[in-house]
Image (tube, rainbow, N blue to C red):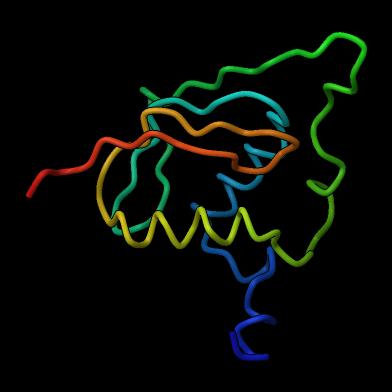
Length: 113
């Protein structure tokens, strides 16, 4: 990765749809996002999109504190998620698992052709 590429991996450099997904992951903190559409590599919330929030007893279940920051460097898991969406192009994320406000894994439906 070049030095310039490293600087591009910040919150401020994200498209509006990616900012929305990042904010939702930070808000959920622990849980899943179901039925998230991907069009041209961009996440799209639709009326079918649902959030499954996992509540941990004895833990802090509030949104991630980074959500209020104007800018910060993106963690590797977030960068990997957005690179995966770009490669996917068009499809549906059946569920995106979130742990600690970060993407942990996902199951996708994608065109066979």
